[in-house]
Length: 108
Image 1 (tube, rainbow, N blue to C red):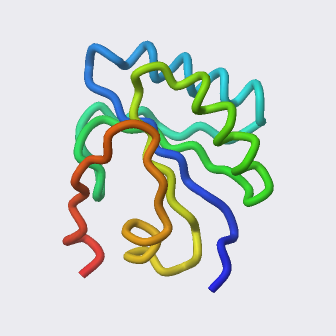
Image 2: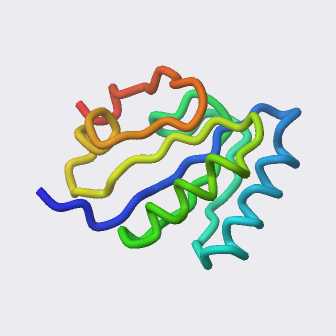
């Protein structure tokens, strides 16, 4: 098994949308990461609004250090990209903030 990169999902509620957008813009400026769509409702396994940042494997360490200092009260769900979606969303994960229950039924 090899982790080829990471997805960092910014979780937000309606009242946190602007903060999430600012965080994503700052991450793009600092790391050049692609910023996905801002979903204002749960999508896939994610329990609430989210936006995906895509990180190369070599960006994870610097991003993690930066995110700890810059996420404010936002929750980030970060998972590895190994090609095994279930493992990526259950075993290859790091939470920045309080962990939340995912809907893993989509991987069955």
